[in-house]
Amino acid sequence: MTDEELQAIRARVEAATPEPWKVEGRHPSYSPDHFQVDGIVTAYDDPERADFPRPIQIVETDSGCYPPYLADAEFIAQARTDVPALLAEVERLRAELHAHEVAHDRRIYEAVKRGR
Image 1: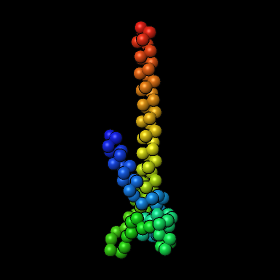
Image 2 (image 1 turned 60 degrees about the vertical axis):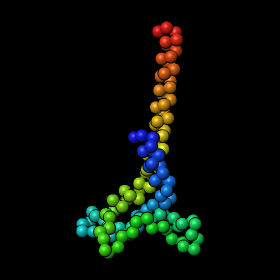
Image 3 (image 1 turned 60 degrees about the horizontal axis):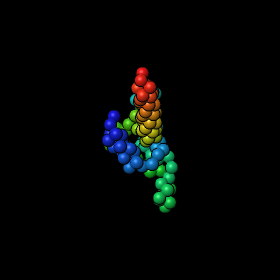
Image 4 (image 1 turned 135 degrees about the horizontal axis):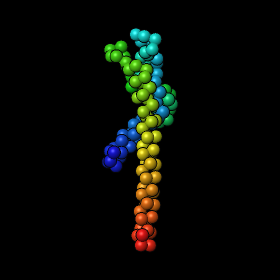
């Protein structure tokens, strides 16, 4: 993945509604193993809207469409937390790799300098 691709992902993360997100309204579907949901909301009130003390609606479904199944909704809601964590891990691993490359180059340079 290129630096530009990672920057684009980070920009989307930073532009999105703050985390955490959660699934709202679980309803049994056609089998006991499947649930449909009403939507995905922020887990907390909007701090900029004291006059509107309720979660921010991220995704809302209605009777005119097929709502997502619980597993899909959980995946979407959790992505708001998972994506920033994955970006941080990519950065950490890249920094670690860079440190190993620098140390390796330094060992080669010292070996060549000593005539080996």
